[in-house]
Image 1: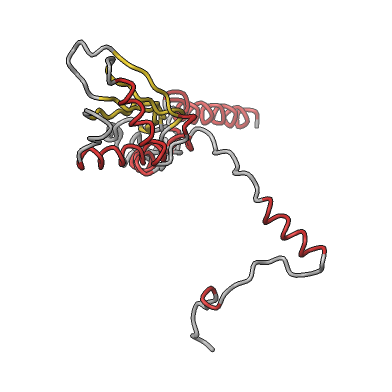
Image 2: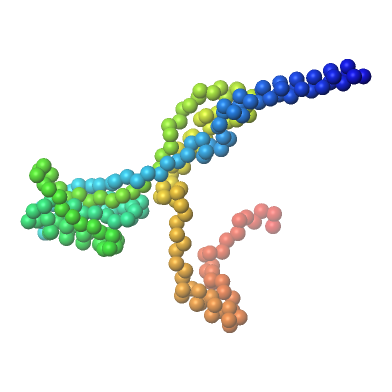
Length: 225
């Protein structure tokens, strides 16, 4: 009986050692996760966006092509920009006129005047164009294509190194404002007039829901009726 128990003890110890030797390489050496967002994190970085436009006089304005470029640039700033937008004109007699012209154009396109910064630069290099710039943000992740691990190797029960990379690239490319990946946006202020209307109706015992018109009602299907 003693010999039988000894044999069972040895067999048990050997089985534990064998199991440990099989699991150790994957647990200790392979740090990959089954979450693609962890394997391929998205990096959000600031970038400087700028456009340079020729300017002669306020009365002359901009050429049609330059006007279209300027409007598109400002629209991109209003959607993706962060902080102020700058106007930098070559130093000289017409510097003030150029700055004033573009500042008014920015304001007319919806840029708050408090977010417009102005300045001048040395034009010794011969560049007489006016530069408008702002800080935006871009999102990106590491390049995909790491097929160093065979997809048929499932002993570790872990995903391949390339797992989730394409999804992360798509998210980085489609996100409207990369800053949303870093922190949530602040809550918009409440509508005080709507709040007063709802509370007034509630105190009078009236329904507080908004009235619906006939074109706002619909049904999915008549099947089965």
